[in-house]
Image 1 (cartoon, rainbow, N blue to C red):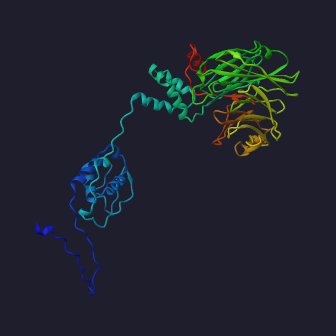
Image 2 (cartoon, rainbow, N blue to C red; image 1 turned 180 degrees about the vertical axis):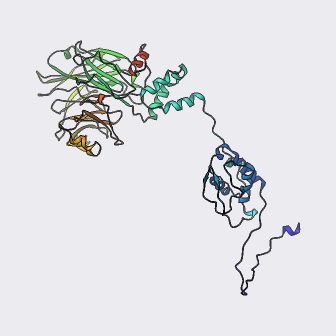
Image 3 (cartoon, rainbow, N blue to C red; image 1 turned 60 degrees about the vertical axis):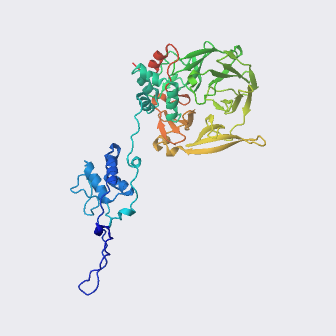
Length: 501
């Protein structure tokens, strides 16, 4: 015992044949394995989540915890890892390398010596070596996590809701639908187009999972005015009523126009809005507003009214003189609490909902064959036009000091880099902007060659071609997430809308 307690003798230099001395050879004596370290390492290596990791990673982890190579080898020997198929348990032999899953991995670098036992750090606590598995999710939470990852087209949630009443309850929960919208970036899918072009149906779907039969609604009797936040506004030309139509729920509400709006030689436009401002909530179940504008070009007067579904009445009329111009039934833009409408000569008129007043807007200092108005990226009024094969995006800026108004061309997009050159080369008439989907931040470009329409995602600059059945020169994009029906016949309407047999 006295002999083992004394320090080892210093290394001796060995003489070589030429009378000199060889270089000192340092060799530390082997140290006994520390059982508590080995047991901790065995528990770590035996954990199910650790066994799937590479041998190199496990060896490095244990080495960083202060274990010697002999202790690590002993732990590997006790665990008998099926991935480790080497002939010898040693993990620090330079002449070998590990084989696991049939793939050769990098060799472990050997240590030239073992540090003294009294200089090794204390063993790591068990909670650092052992990784507790996370508790399993409840079944309903797991189902909702799966539902969240379904594609955003309504057909997928719709089909899942018919599996069972329990699944339907989970999917129809308002909190889940809000999470579903947030998971997909609050960007609803584009499902189709409303259009007033006589060569196409009133509604043309662009998604195979969504159809809507409008065969009984002819262009002679119906005129589309707007489509926004899942609702469409359609004018019945024969009865003098407006139809506010929620396509996803099947809910329809007819609104009788003011008496003054049904006389004279008229051109009209309109907008349907969520009365609550459609900020982070389900607009389908909220009350709505309808703004209706009509121009009587016999006296060059444009008038406006505002309807509330909560009161069921139209507000007071407001009018403005618009010399030799009238409103178009084209897309409108909502900026702040002002609605903007296009006039036939390219002018713009604003309807202030708070003040119930109309005002003409300065024309953009550039001439295009066609423009569309839309909210700009900076939250101001914007518009888009195409010059040759360049898409120009403009923003209307109002100076904060003197109130001076100016138009700024904030972005130019080269369409020749996005659309195939042979298609652009075959164009006879200019390429035109067709529509803008505000919820999806997508602008639509119409190319007359082959009657093609393209969607340009303004944030990612990704481009897609719209299916031929949905191509039109001017229209109102319909976007919506899945929303459960809120009327008695909602289920049947949804089955028809989503083409479920």
